[in-house]
Length: 247
Length: 316
Ligand SMILES: Nc1ncnc2c1ncn2[C@@H]1O[C@H](COP(=O)(O)OP(=O)(O)O)[C@@H](O)[C@H]1O
Ligand SMILES: [Mg+2]
Image (cartoon, rainbow over all chains, first blue to last red; front, side, top):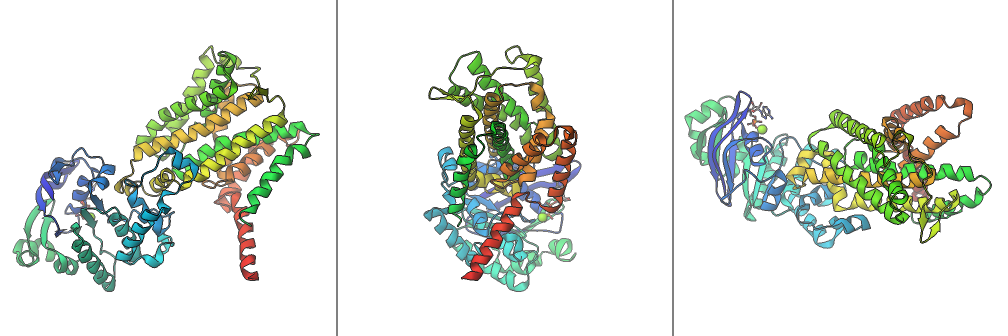
């Protein structure tokens, strides 16, 4: 589904990602792990064309190299951020609604005549069903700034899910969550997978990663050092030394 | 309560000229205030909703005003065509000033818009058709359906109509798909791009809408003041429009109206001997508002209406 080929990202003299190759297969939870600064977020940012890169990234055989960031959602790719990027002046409902921006049709006449497309019935129902999936039904009218950090992360997850993506990129979704919230998050991700959505998960929390991943790619200093099932990876000496050993 | 208030205010507004029959000059100042409010509403959308900044907003009033005046005076077109022409040309320049915004932010964008505003007034000063440094004089009053709106009173209704239209459009726009996209962009550009918002298009849209409002304000200004000079639309006036927006309450719907009336009041109605102090006084008001009323003068009204609301709740 996602095919990363010889991906390299340089920041000046720093090589953040070095000829990375990896394939994410359809309907799996594929985790990308590695110590801080390994280049995981940079991989996401390359997919989103936030940073220039060499090599190529294919989504369903189509190169993303010249797809502008705002075009990805309509192709079926969504993401969350390590540092939240919510719309804090808006309610939870409107935050989620904006995930539908590419599909919600409007025009200049609707824009100035007072048609509020995000309150149309079909759209409201979509928002409601995603809110139910992540457990935000009671909080649709709240402002995210006043919600606990873990709940804010759910808002971002809902915003990424509402447009029915095929591929979901999650950047450290469990960071900052307590263990009950982590369990809840795991359940949601498994449910998301059940609905046919492929997940590329960057995560620090080994408990979460080992429990739900189908495949794990391990990065260190911008390079792939191992790949395999949770069992294989956790037994790989290089991984233990580079990553698990550091902890 | 919420539904009736605007209707009552509208009725009062419609009768203002009747109360002020004996003081036509006051009506002139009211018209001026509303014209500033129309222009400032554009800046309000640009800054309060889209999170951009412009220090060249007055230049768009100039573009609208000059275009319309020239279309009427040199091309003898009817006012209504000139009005639309003025807005369209202002929009076109809005695209031009919007382009730096695609790359620049904050301070740098402020400087770029300032420079572009200067270029506009500079060109106006050099062209022949704009009257150059002499300015354009004797611009004919607006006319609609064959009626010339000669006096301040008739112009009052035209300007009021335009102001209400602008506020109505703004209100709808803020809630629309485009308005929501602009607010998303203001809150988090990264987040907005990730959900599929084409930032470049929406930034340009923000500048176009802002320019349209400024252009409309400029057209009305030209035909009611009847005199245009490029220096009237320089940096000083752009900053005044900025102050009007901030004092009234940035991002609010009616703030610019409050800010504009206050500005015209301070500017024009202080005793003649105190003119030098107007800038100082306005500056002090600006500082006080920024310090104590972050949402501008509108905040006072929010507080009052909230008090009413909580009373209503208690009585239930
Ligand atoms: N925009 C940037 N400019 C310069 N250096 C960056 C930028 N983004 C990331 N880096 C650097 O690239 C390396 C990889 O960062 P990142 O991908 O965020 O790591 P991870 O997500 O694995 O913790 C780090 O050394 C980081 O400092
Ligand atoms: Mg990271």
